[in-house]
Image (cartoon, rainbow over all chains, first blue to last red; front, side, top):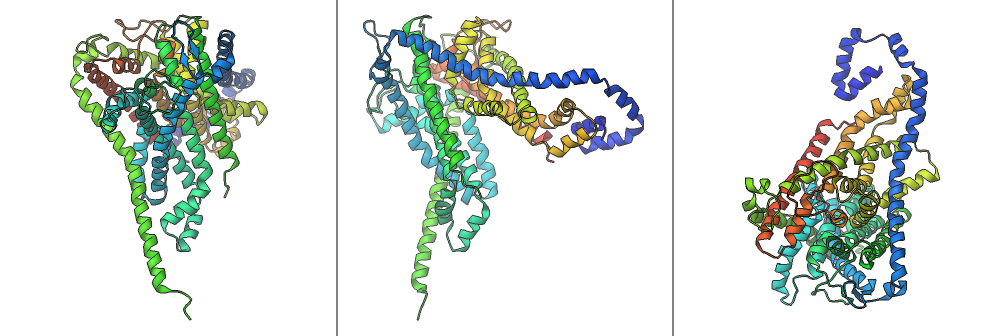
Length: 333
Length: 292
């Protein structure tokens, strides 16, 4: 295949080759092609230059990480030069806007984040794994072909839309069941974050379960197991590492989720276990400060970096755990 | 002597089969939950928003009065934003994928780059906002311009594009490359003329899906400080602008009940925008994807 007909092949598929064969007589002769291509010096420079350029492009992603870690650390250090680090880590009150003695106790924001995450996990794990089992063990190919894209749509909906949904639909609905529920609370965004991470758990767990070889399933079926027994006693244990990894990744998404909790969670950080009252998560605090007018250089301005850094550490930890689980405990067949 | 007690076997078997059926129903209901949630969400937004989708809605700028509020600035702003994000993220993403798949040798540095990309994908978007605020808005003093927001969004979706491009490039079989080398082509010629053309459908599909994530992403824009009510259209890349999700966020926050409907209408526009992008991606995938 000359480079010309190769291009044709790639552009037009097999038709292209026929076209090329038909016009074979019009093609430049091999000698001409060689003469054209033998501009060796130029070619050598390009061949040497390209890997370097591509490496520089590839290093942008590394620079991004350094940029994130660098900015977070430098600004957080300035923050800690004003607020003692121990007050930040162990403080349970977060009142940065207080005129006298503002309080920066991150535990109040962490409590808000964990409340929402916990509710989300309670919603997403049973439903997510349930749908994964249904899709991989029970559903026919046709059903799967319909449901999987719908889950993808659910995963592609912008979080601002979910936030609006939580605020204007889920909260009023829950208020009819729990009358003492406030307009802003942890329950409603928690449930909606759960719906948001559900497709992720479902689809990653389904992948893990589909990866369990058919032969093992058939062995169990041949021994007289029902489909349920195959699913729970054979497939689930074999796919467990993948399923747990998917849950951990989903938890990481829930911790970093911003718009749902900003819209429906409120802006009152509290350090307690109440889910019916207004809360504030780490992400929501960052949004609250940056959409207001916290002047550059104020302590409040630096506080968003310290909160961002904490958030970053949380999600990094989750991602590392997910990575280790899926690497270390994977069963190879 | 009876080795098998038929009666008890049949009894137990029936029980097991019933349990199986019950759990099948439970798993099906679990699957249904997501579908119902999706249906309710769409139903709510369409019924609330459709009444506000009028020609005026597309011609008006943001406003404090719900009946006058329009989406023109946000829609145009989002399109401008995409004009920055698309080229920047695709060039960076495809370049990185080409390096990792075609050139990178297996050594510590390249392993680090790979690991770094997968970690970057897990960083919350709001943290990317902080990066954008510090580096692009302040350090490079781009202000809250299209360019600053575009760069931030590009970095945000970069890992997704890299992974999609890597998969597309990896799907091109080794034989085709070997054949090209056999014909005397250099590495770069092979990449640009053999590998890339057949990987482009996969790359584009992944890129469009990643871009549609950037269209709906709100948190980084809020952190960068993108204004909400803007009474003019952007003139160049350094202009101030607003984007669809920002506008929706602002409307959703407002206490007047009327703005709920305006927000729904805004969400409808955003969803149609995403739908168009996703349809293009599916079209490309179905039309041009080739299996070896």
